Length: 273
Image 1 (cartoon, rainbow, N blue to C red):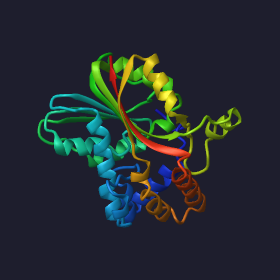
Image 2 (image 1 turned 90 degrees about the vertical axis):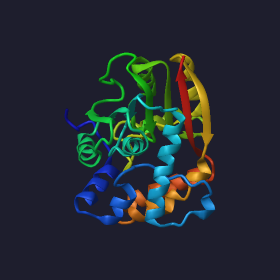
Image 3 (image 1 turned 180 degrees about the vertical axis):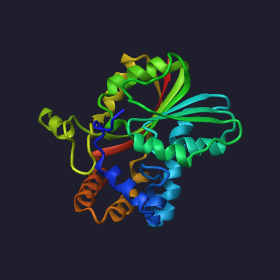
Image 4 (image 1 turned 90 degrees about the horizontal axis):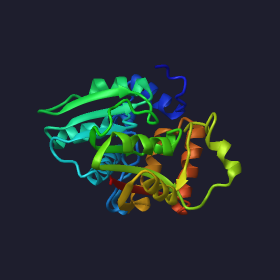
């Protein structure tokens, strides 16, 4: 499938730097491409290595909400370079795991760097979150770590998760959630060609997730508000993208939005009824 629909300029930069064997980029975004989590943000060291550990902790926070156990079938949607499945691969020994991403470049890297251990099975698949290429009632757990804002439609995604998840199965996500309803005039800003550097982004309020749960027969189990715990991410990201003035500026805007709680960071878990 062509990547013509993929509009992720920041990923273009990450991939280019990794191709050039930039060691700093490898440390920051070589495995996980999401924000970090610090139990005590005041103890953040501000180093790339500290950030790498924090991204692993955030990943673990999300998949822990999925109540994963041995022999489960697990799907990670928007899998990036396979960091979440790599994390699970280190903890569990008999999972059947699939990673899905619309960007074939990310799938290619994931296949190179993530190899199954023990009796685990791992497969990476190129495809859309709006049309998951899997059978009905197939997975015990579905994960989506900090990626839903890139998906074209949350309703379509939730409909697909409801279809592929077994009854009683778990669904865990992390997302940036806005504190108020965006004016209708703002919608074109987040659609179409997207915004510079970060591409196509669609934000929503937490109420949207309540509505989706009701519409698609999910129960919301847990909601973790971790806005303050991810804030030490921003100096790291601004620094790693310091050569890109637009990326640096937009990351600063995002940082201010979270400092003022206009945008909050939440981990949310659901169970299919």
